[in-house]
Length: 236
Image 1 (tube, rainbow, N blue to C red):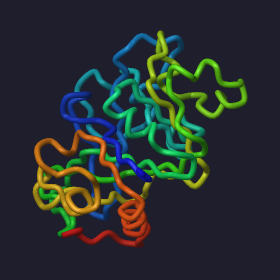
Image 2: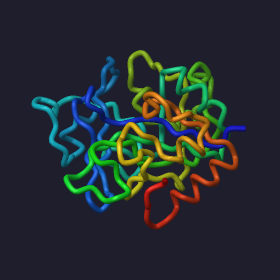
Image 3: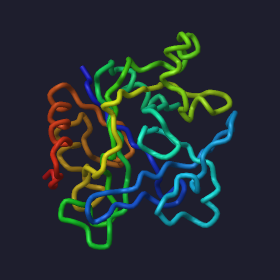
């Protein structure tokens, strides 16, 4: 039975044209993608997030698709995630309350990366949810009692017109946006480390950094233990 899934999120070289930065001390910046669909209400812009990353010209005033939301992040007050795509929704819908969802992003390395970082860009875990309830199928969301729908308030897919999520997640207060990125890449960003190739159900071949990564009970426990370390040496 699946007990954890890692999902790719955040900015990339396609949208908005830059990756989030990774710094020499392991800290990083979570940069959302821009919103690409019509919405029923105004959204935060990149300027509202007060980011340090150098955005492409004209991007500062673009509305953002702020998903996942982390309570400690600007313009957020809770932990939610939604996704319209079946390839991500299906493994997430297999989870249950209390299971974990990890979020990973491709980040650009600093000019002098530490030995546990990828040399240029790489994939890194940036945060996690402990699920507050079973994942909700998007087709079932409207039938939920008002109190249960409130858990997902503020999620970007609820602001789209029309609503388009295939799955919705809510995290408990034990969820968090990390202070330090946790590597999934080897020295080259395209090369997966053993957190992918040995612990997950993914082969680590091809563009693995775009795919959901599934972890069974034992592998999820191993990943959780590693993430909870105070420092993150290379997983090799």
